[in-house]
Length: 69
Image (cartoon, rainbow, N blue to C red):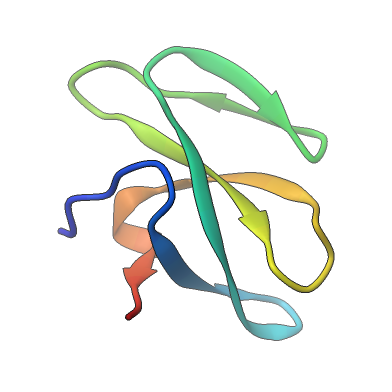
């Protein structure tokens, strides 16, 4: 599983295909983005990302994100 930090460039899979964006924050509690409520914890954090294409925010588990250069 990748180690992610704010500002990292990442890509993830959506129903429209692969999307790229930037990590905006690490989520360790309940948070809402894009109509989705993420229930993260310090032991199982999730990451808020901003899409480079749409500018919209989403929250994903670390395993769904791939760090890119």
